[in-house]
Image (cartoon, rainbow, N blue to C red; front, top):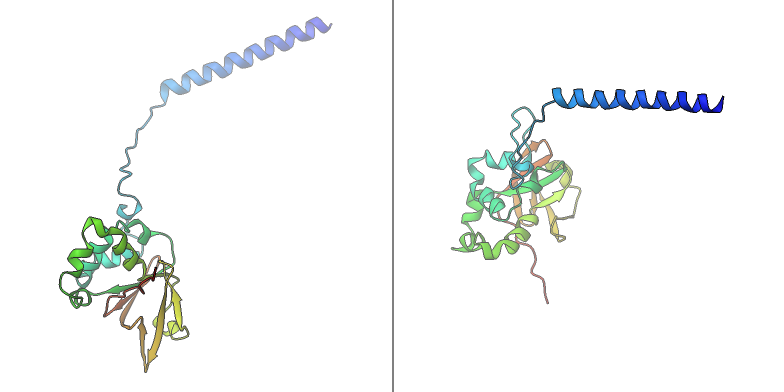
Length: 191
């Protein structure tokens, strides 16, 4: 009796095995593999999305008053950081703010050998959060993405961040962009 049960179980297992093996063959013969090629050198900053609220990088790219800022972000390879989920608060200097720097400063910072210094300056313009200009009035300082702090001042109805006046604010899909009239320069580190 034990031998008959073992034999019956062996036959059942064999049928199951053959059945599974055939199903696998049919599936592989009718299934086509689709190869998707992804350019991993560009990252999420370059994914097209015309339906969502623009992120902070897209707002800067779309602004004719922020072409210098966009060029600096690209030179520092920070595009992908600015499209993260956030929330991010970006203090975006205008082209005129960059033009007010000493002659040759921007050109010098855009050189590949100055990428680290440029990234530090740009990170000084970013902080986690999504605070309106009105809400910023409650702060005395903010911690920036480069691990430094920037001072907040209120003069009448105006808000100043590190001495730069917020002249406009634009909500983004991943935070807010505060347009400022000066370039923020992080404090120099003493060795």
